[in-house]
Image (cartoon, rainbow, N blue to C red):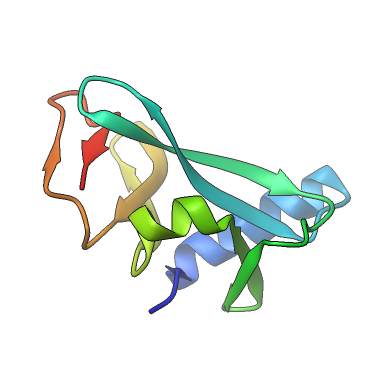
Length: 107
């Protein structure tokens, strides 16, 4: 499988990278935390690690470490606006349950 971005998310990441003035892509990962056990992490990547797995969507590189890939393989990252709120939305087919606040999940 793979990690993909919607076109809207890719445009948003490109804008962030351009404003930042550097970076090879966006790192998507998970960490242990929250009500349900796991939470997503997003950060810009300046240098790739030897064991990184790289995907490309709409010209934007998405970098994932092998440990996180197990939990997020097949995920589509979207960027949505709802009223005054906007942000990235994770469409992860591996999620079995999410906490009420939407900050964490279980697989």
